Amino acid sequence: MTLPLLIAMLLAAGAASAQEAGAAKEADAAKEVGTVQVNALRDPDFKTYRAFVAGLDAFDAKHTLAPAAALRFLLRPSTPNASIEGVTIRIAGNETNMAVPLAADGTFAMPRNQAALDEEAEVLLNRKKGSFRWRPSVHTPEVPANARRLGDLRLECEVRWAVDRKDMGFAKRTIISAFGGPCRTARVHVLQLAPRALAGYRMVAGERSETAPADAVREDRTTYMVPLHDASWPDEALVEFEFVDQK
Image (cartoon, rainbow, N blue to C red; front, side, top):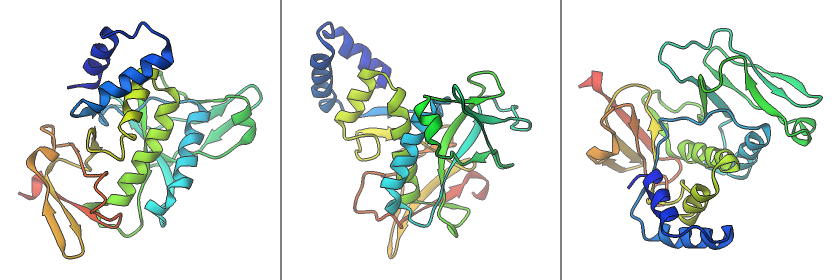
C-alpha cells in the first residue's frame, strides 16, 4: 500500500474531528498497516534554513553512527541533462545574505548562523524551483568505492527525517512517527540511491555475510533498500555492491 493511498483511506475514514483526535486515529491505523513506501528517488526540494538546521542537530545527536564522517549535502538535478555549472546557493533572510559554497562534485556544507535562524531565512538557488533536489551525504573515509557503510546510511536517514518532518504534512508526519520514524522500523521502506546500476548486494560484518534478497534492489536497478532498523547488523557492516556491468 502506498503512502498517498494510506493517507486517503485514513482521511476518508473520518478525519473531520479535531486535529489531535485525528492524529491519534491515524497513528492507530498506521500500526495495523504492513508497510509504507518512502520513495527516496524523489529527493526533497529545498527547505527552510530552520529545517536544515534540524538536520545539523540530528547529525550531532546521532554522530556515533558514523563518528569519522562529516555531514555534507548533495545537490542533484531533477532532470538528467541539468548541470550544476553556474548554480549558486545562498541563505537569505531580512538582513542575512550568505553564500553557501558548492563543490565541483555537487556537495555543500550547510553552515550554522544564529541570525539566519532568528530571521526564518530561506535556502535559495539561482535556478527555477524544483529543478534541483538535495540529499544528505555521509561518507566515512576509506570505505571502498563499491560499498556503503551501514552506519553512514543510518545517519543519512536520521538527518533527512529531521529535515523533512519540519515541513511535512501533519497526517504524513503522524503516520511515519507512529512507526518510530523511517529509520528504525521494517514497516517503512526507505530507498537508497546506487552509484550505478545494481545487480544485487550483500551485507558483510566480520565473518557474517548475507546476500540481499532479490527484491532489495528495485526494478530500475538504481535504488535499493537496506535493513537500517536491524540491530543485529552493526554500524560497521558494509553493503557491498555487485554492479550490472560486472556480471
